[in-house]
Image (cartoon, rainbow, N blue to C red; front, side, top):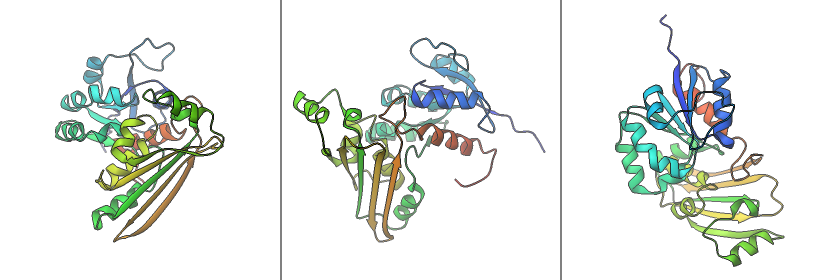
Length: 266
């Protein structure tokens, strides 16, 4: 049997998600993959792999993992795919921009991959959507108020959040608006919209709860194929409470599925 060459992986970003993804790749914990380098704006110290600029990464990598936020994906996503490099993204909220999503889907020959991030159940939701679609899908997310503060908020909103002693509804509206207004907090809503292939049917409620020790996502979907309800309660990342601690491990599992060295549930 011919030996399979390990896929060379680059990581954009070295925060709460990117640093763990890079560390596990460097330690050989993803079968069939090796860490080629890390792309960041600043200077990395004690990094587990060489620091690369984007041009170097496109030359040296078979696949790049985006762990740096919507801004980085918007800036570099299309160029990565057009260079023939595969791209696995974590900042799915950027796909709320339909023109940007269309540009990624049209780009190539690199392939675009999405990760499930902080939630499960997307396979069943996608199956129901393929069958008959949905009449309604509601994503209700509950987080600590301090993790939901945004630069666009007026002082009254900031004061209400910081002084909250009981749950406060911060947002109720479409998945597109949720992803745009809370780019680091509602990738879950974007993941659901992408799984079912319909941004318009997904609505979002965002609640700031000062007692929320866990980040909670409740996904409720109703349609001809059935009624589904998923409740996910994740521990926030110690490094970044805006994201769930399980996200880097979701990325690592996605990587292992993509490189295809180990069989199993996908």
